[in-house]
Length: 215
Image (cartoon, rainbow, N blue to C red; front, side, top):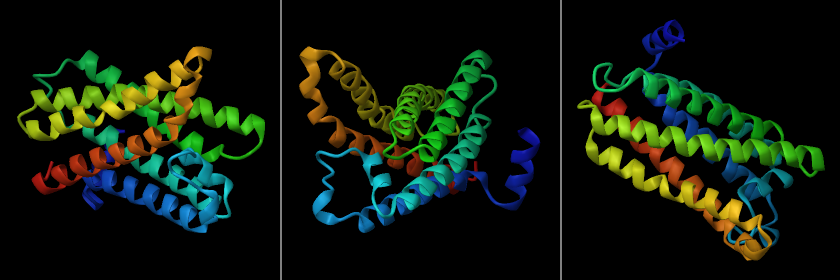
């Protein structure tokens, strides 16, 4: 991986892959949204992945897959930019494991998205895995930024704040599985969209900062 990232960085700054990731995902979502019958889709009541069921579903899926691949490259590069002296190797190992699992799960949920019940279970499992490990690695990375003088503490604090919707989404999702909290399903689609926007903002801010600083 080190050799691959080094060679790739000689061709194009790998810090840009965070921007490539969110660009691919946004384009896929927008095209799928435009092609979805307007009167049949409501961001307040329907999950993000519902877009894969519309006429532009293939664009949604491809956008997720490409976005996940770019994100996988980006997070593996980002972890290597953190200080070797101030950050525990053990913590970095945990962080990159979570990051890789999250990005691969995101790719998988793009591959498996449809109306078939088996596909839905595979998609749902991948989504939950991506959320859990995503919150973990983003939190780790933001803590690392707080300790690393190469990164602005403002970026790190902003990232920690942005990770809150992901934590809230996970808590409410697992609570809604209990009969007494089943009503929480009403807010999950909106929260999922907020979470999607939050992750886009995190990737954008970190990738832009790295590119600007030449990290």
